[in-house]
Length: 235
Ligand code: GAR
Image 1 (cartoon, protein in one colour):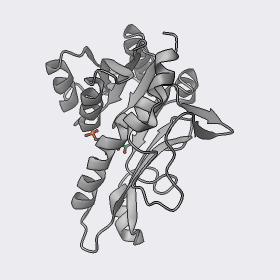
Image 2 (cartoon, rainbow, N blue to C red):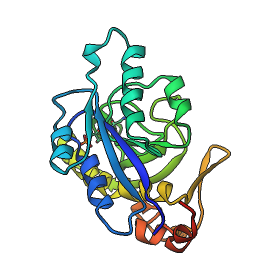
Image 3 (cartoon, rainbow, N blue to C red):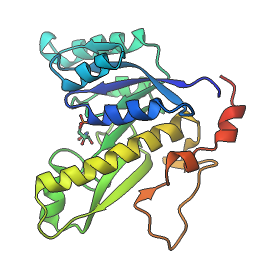
C-alpha cells in the first residue's frame, strides 16, 4: 500500500471517537495513521488512552494562556511537531479562528452529533427529541470558518424512539459515530472525497442505491474506498 496519511487528532475529553479511529488505523489496509493527539485539557481521558496505545500526545490547556490567540498558537505549534497531512477534530470543544481553519482548508474534518445542517452547536440530542425528530444521527464534514458547517463527507442516521432520553439517544448516535468517523477519514485519506462547488464528490466510492434505505451514506469504507486507486497513488 502507498504511504498512509499522517493524522493528528484534536480532542477535549473522553476520546471515544479517537479510539474508533485508532482501531481503524490498526487495520493493515487502512489509508491513515494517527501520529499524535492534542488536547486542550490535561485531564482529558483520551490522552491517557492514546498514551497507553503508544501514540504521542500533547496537552495544551487553554487555561494556561492569556487569550484565545495565544492558546491557538501553542496548539498550532504542537500540531506542527507531528507533521500531519490531516487533522481530525474528535470532540474538540474549542472554537477555532478563521486563520487556523484557513490554514487547514480541505485537510481538517470534524464529527458532529446531528444530521447537519440540523442542530449545529450543543445539546443536539435534547433538541432533536424536543423538535419531535423521528430520525437523528451524526455528520462528518470538512471544517470551514463557520462552526459545525462545511461540506458533508458522510452521515449516519439512527431512529428517535418514543420514550428516548438524551442519554439513550446520545448512546445510539455515539455507536453510529464510531462507525462513521473511520469511514469518512478513509474517504478523505484515500483522496476519494473531493470538494466541488461547496459539496463533497466521492470519486470511486460506492454510491447508495436510489430507493434503498441506508443508514450510513456512503456505505462502509472497505467498499467506499477505491483500494486499487489508492494503490496507484504516489506517496
Ligand atoms: C461526540 O459525540 C462528538 O460528536 C461531539 O463530542 C462528542 C465527543 O465524544 N462533538 C461535538 O459536539 C462537536 N461539535 P468523544 O470524546 O467520546 O469522542
